[in-house]
Structures are given as C-alpha cells and as structure tokens.
Length: 285
Image 1: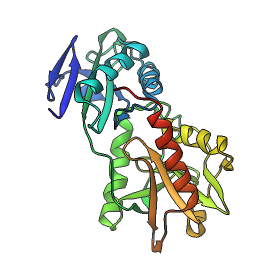
Image 2 (image 1 turned 90 degrees about the horizontal axis):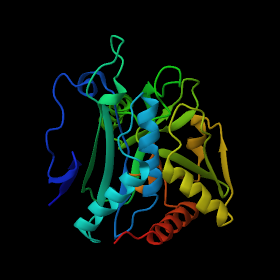
Image 3 (image 1 turned 90 degrees about the vertical axis):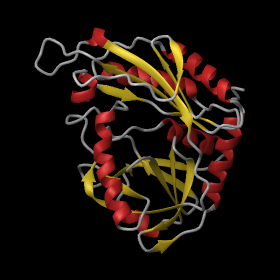
C-alpha cells in the first residue's frame, strides 16, 4: 500500500477518480490543498496544516465540509494505518463541483473534500543547488489568492522549476513584484550572515509557511537571532549559509547558489536538529 484516500466517508486504496470535466474545480481551479508530513511515527504541526486547509477553502469562497479537528483525526488515522516506518505526505483538499450565480463564481454548497495520504520519502541527499529564478515573480495579493494554499498558484511555480532544471539547478530564488526576495519556487528560504538567520518578511506575496514559522520560533527560543525583513537578491551572493524550510524536505541545506559552493553551516545544523527534536515530541504512532 502506498496511497490511502478518504472520500465520501470511507478509505480507498490508491487514487480514485473524484472529478468530472464539468466540475468547477477541474476546469476553473477552485481547489485548495495543504501538505503535512509524517515520518518515524511523528506528525509535526498537523493541527496547523488542518486549520490552514479550512482557511484556504474559505478564502476561495468554498464552504469547508470538514472541520480542522476532523481533518486532524482522519490524518492521524491514516498515519497509523501505514505505521511508524513510513515517510508520508498528508494532503487534505477542498474543491467546488458547481458554479455559482456569476459566470465563473463558485457554488460554496457544492464543496467536496478528500484526504490523500501517500508514501513520499524525505530527501536524503547532501543538499540543494539553487540559483536566481528569472522567468517568474510572485503575484501580489490583489492579483492572486496568495493567502491560501491554492492549486492555481502552482503552475507559475512549475514554470520557475522548469527554468531552474534547464539551468542545472534543483530550485530557484523567486522575487516579488518589487524585486525583493519572496521564497523559492517551492519553499521558504533563509540566509545566514555573521550568525544571524535572515528570512523575507511576510508581505502577502507568499505563504509564510508553517515549517518556516516553527523554525523561527525554535531558533529564537534557542537564543539564535532571527530577522524577518526585506531581503535583496544580492544578499545571497555573500551569505555564509543558505537553507530552506517546507513540507517536502522540512529543513534542507543549500550547497550551491549560482556558481558558489556552500557548506552546511552551524545555524542550519541547529535548525535541523531543533526541528527533528520538535517533531519527535509529536508522535502519532
């Protein structure tokens, strides 16, 4: 078993067909998801991921048919079915099946829900090679639902990843509309200078992620200085360390930025160790 999907009140093995070509979410993009992680029997911040899924649905005009508490309980149930050896991605989703009164609006009462939990190993390589992404920018809150984990945002990120892969990188630093650093194509980002961890301040152009916020708190509680501020792309050219946070890989080091080779540094190592300790304090099975 590598996938479990909760749909219409019961669990299904695999990836069942849930949508038709006329479903609003299928052709007009009224769909959100969230992404938690479970590994070694631990499920860090699954409650926050569940709550964010509900908030994201409401941002898109949907009427969530599950509460955060219900999503959390289902997530834990699925994780226990897989056991404590599995490395899992935990993905709740909401979408609309019908349009509303307007030409492309949603009917909130047609909202559907599923929870897909599947095997997704954590990255175990030496680190990431990234560069400055030139083909895309993060949208402003007025031009896209940047305060939701909305699926419609991800084709733009995919375009950025395609650019970076073509240039020999795995990911890229993405700028906001003003030319300041927002995040990478798929994660939040930190640089370290003189022992201070620095990350872009949340300005509405990107999601200040749950793993990002947890990492900031853990570092500050451990006495490490963390600055949330405007970051210029040139600052990465002289950074002592670079690392990323997100659900795909949790806390990951960067070993190359453009043509500069980097080593995993003490602040990254501290962040990774603190996060691992935190995760293991939140066991599910």
